[in-house]
Length: 316
Ligand code: UDP
Ligand code: MG
Image (cartoon, rainbow, N blue to C red; front, top):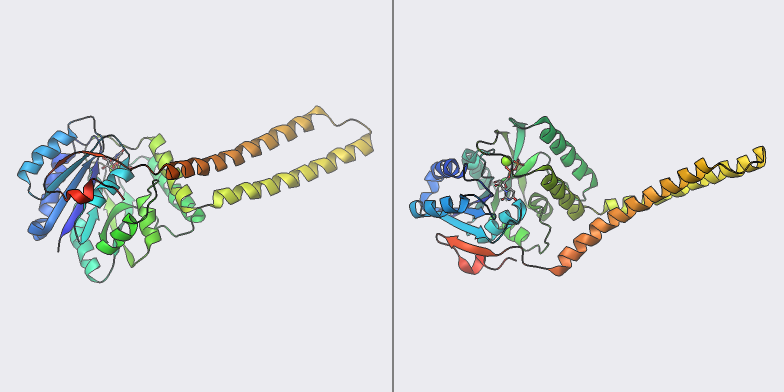
């Protein structure tokens, strides 16, 4: 049975030697039927050089170089499209998720599961801020989302060919991969593990990228923010009613013109609500625009190793 391992890499020159060392050990039991796919997501350091050099040494290694940085989830998708395995294992290049659990995940999959995802019981070496935002993110996402998305899981998981084919058949551009697997269904189970600190280098997810990722996740899996706009407008109508009572009352009782303060209050309150509503609409319209353009997700500018070229040069 062929096992493919997919790893997106962006500026990971420090991690790659250690990653390959551990991965080659991990694939020992499946030596002749394993495939390691490293996707270089438009790195500006020596990542690609290291990948192509290593491919001369490691016959199971396949390298793909994207023509520009497309982001973690797209790089992952590129690797998944190139994967030939019957089972596919995905992880990050920074070794935060221990590749050694592959054995356990394989055993679980033998019991008939299609997706065995890793669930972090602890996240050592990550900032309080990152842990806090991640905690809030997964809970908020589940509150809003129409499909339950397993909490505290990343893309670290082993998947079966049929689960992967299901996800690859989804045409959307905004790819929130772990949510797409949750939506696809099949038999899923979590496996608990301890998340290690990043072994080398710094995070490739600055706050802005995290925010974009969270926005993609929420808008791909929920339309409740759009409904929220409607609810908000009910609320603002209610406030208007109350205000008109107050204004009307003070006109009759005190026989004075209502003050500028209430006018100002009303104007700023309602323009705030309008801007918020417009913003929510804008998020979705922007995404509609991107989906409608239907551009290819990425281009492969270089390949090393034995690739299934008919599969890799044409995303979706
Ligand atoms: N990554 C990528 N493209 C990007 C950003 C990140 O391919 O634009 C890769 C990165 O090399 C790593 C994985 O995605 O293998 C997760 O990134 P990172 O570990 O920096 O994120 P964190 O764990 O800090 O959230
Ligand atoms: Mg990481």
